[in-house]
Image 1 (cartoon, rainbow, N blue to C red):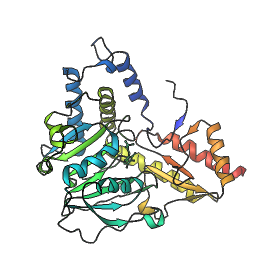
Image 2: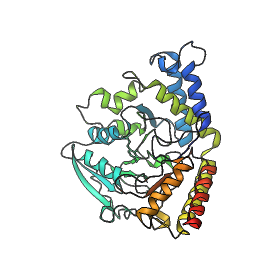
Image 3: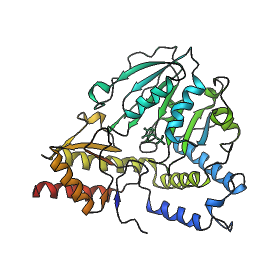
Length: 358
Ligand SMILES: *Cc1c(COP(=O)(O)O)cnc(C)c1O
């Protein structure tokens, strides 16, 4: 193992050491095929087995049955921003979006290329430092309501999402499988893999079969959920090694169990938020504890000098990836499923030491 740094990057993010080892083994030779996973045919029996096992695991982890399709698509999160309105909105239709952060806003912008957008709540005016109020009433004419369960850049997260009267579509890119959820509540879930589920360029989509019957005409096969489902996500040359890495992650998640992962995520987040709240040098970006993300912890320092000094100290201690997004500044520590509690403890101890010596 050559991972000598503690990696708090927001994505591509840290992977479990065992998954990196298994992926490395598969790069040298996949099972007993005599070839590397990087060379494995996308239409052969081995990749079909990878697809089938991964689909079954996703359904098992989400407690879903035959009413749902599981797809592995390319193009990451942003292609889903486009495919959703492309498939489910025509220029006459309206979709609702909750504008809770950077990615939520971008999803909404993409939606506006295809139909009307109704903003069903926004926290943009205060730079997304809290979650917008959940809409009192959701108009029945909306083709869907789009939400982002975890706002990766500003660090807010919906702990609970109620059942609603129109199709509910959720971007779970940065918190899928991080906590127990009623996945049956959602009509379409998507997640770019590079945060909690593998490597970049792969997106997981879980869609209710019923929704597939509502797809607009004139959506070409590659961008059409129904056509992708029909071809078992192997419509074109699939991202074989990317999907395999996601399968390794799914096996790892299943072995740990989502309830255990959630308990560990709660402890990690509590450690870090407590350190921030008890510090005279750092301030949490999101003030309301009920709105705080357990995946991306955002905070600022009292001034630029302190910020730079702490970044330098972290670099000297092999801690990387804690600089805030270019739009927010400050710090963002991403503590996805694969980030170990010990890594968070190391960071928190360094914060305390820094404070004592400042
Ligand atoms: C990272 C992220 C995206 C963007 O994913 P890309 O694969 O880079 O397009 C979208 N939504 C959320 C919530 C994210 O965290």
